[in-house]
Structure formats: structure tokens, C-alpha cells
Amino acid sequence: MGKIHAGTSGWAYTSWKPDFYPTKLASAKFLEYYATRLNSVEVNYTFRSSVTKSLLSDWIAATPAGFKFAVKAHQSITHIKRLRGASKLLSDFLASLEPFRAARKLGPVLVQLPPNFKCELGRLEEFLADLPRHTRVAIEFRHPSWFVDDVYDRLRRANVALCLAESEDLKTADVATADFSYFRLRKDSYSARDRGKVRKRIENAARKGDAFAYYKHEETPEGALYAEALLKDGEDD
Image 1 (cartoon, helix red, strand yellow):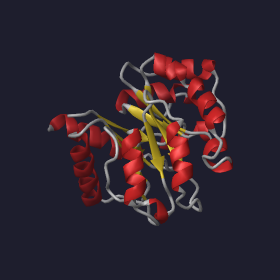
Image 2 (cartoon, one colour; image 1 turned 180 degrees about the vertical axis):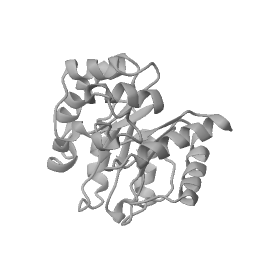
Image 3 (cartoon, helix red, strand yellow; image 1 turned 90 degrees about the vertical axis):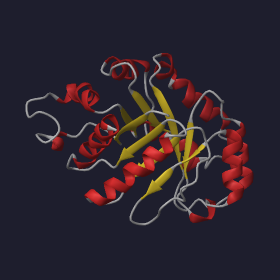
């Protein structure tokens, strides 16, 4: 049985007061408080900006042992190079995350492709060949042409997870391609029944390995509260 890691895509939202963050909590303490209730977060900051050792050290210090940071790959890799000839960029990006790895707090790296990026098996194979085996990687395809067996086979060979994303516009096929799973829960709303279905999917995935699940960040803290309930439900089982 793997471990369930759940959270949201970000934490720095003052609008989460007072339903998640205490009213008087300083924003500098948000991550520290977040980590008392959730055990993982998806970092989108890295999509547009480079991280420094100082910044990562601050995040590491603010979180307890076992907390995991899933990190979105920089747009230069996914949206500018579109995976082609991105070996040096990828290497440098992964090297920048070394403080997380050293602290045992690095979760999967999320490679999110543009919605208009259609399936190109050769380009995918080139990219997968550059991935180090010691780093967990999930790929989020957002064009339906990628959801085919040839892609799944290549992901399995590289032990790269197909990101199981769902939104109002697109739902990824529920296919396991790695020894862990990665969920992005992006619908506009989740009823109690919907959350029950999500929980069952994640629990089933966790029977095969660690499961990482992230609700969409919003102006309200609903996603954080849903993630917290998911973790508590798992403790109660």
C-alpha cells in the first residue's frame, strides 16, 4: 500500500482566511500552517520563475519531515522548446531542485504540455530518454491525440506517470503507467458524491504505489478542505 499525498496547487492565498488560515496569521507563515493540515503541495511558481537555494531552504524549513513538494517544470522546457532539444534546460531545472531531494521532500516533477501540442512519439521518446531514473515525473497531456496505447507503452518503459487530470473540458483516461500516480483535480466544483468517487480512485491507485493528488487553487479554500478530508478519510480506514 502506497502513501496518499494530498494538497492544492499553491498555498499563498489570503482569501483562504478565515475558513482555512487563521484570521491573524501572517502570510509569511502560510506554508508552515498549511503543512500542519496537508502533506503535499504542487508548486506552480517554477513554471515561470527560477528558484534559488535560499527560497527552497525557506520552504524546506517551514515544512515537517515527510512533506512533499510536487514541482511544475519550467515553461522553457514544455511550452517554448516543446520537449525538443530540451536536454540542457531539463538538466539545469532538475539540478535546481537538489535541495528538495537532499531534504527528502521532492515529490514528482509535473511536465504540463500546451493544449495545442499534438502527439509526437519521436519527440516524446527523445524527452523520456533524458529523464533520470531517480526522479519521479508525471506528464500532463492536454490534447486528446496523446491518449493512445503507443504513448502509454513508452511511459511505462520510462516509469513516467500519465497525469490523471480532469476538468470541465477534458478527462484523462484512467491508465496507470508508473509505480506511482498523479492526480490533478480541476473541475469547477465537487459535490460530496464527486469527492467520494475521487477518494475511491485515489485509494485504488494507492494500493499500487504512492498517490499524489492536488485540487485546484481557488479564491476560496474549498480545494484545501477537500484535500484535508481526503487525508482524514484515509486515516480513518
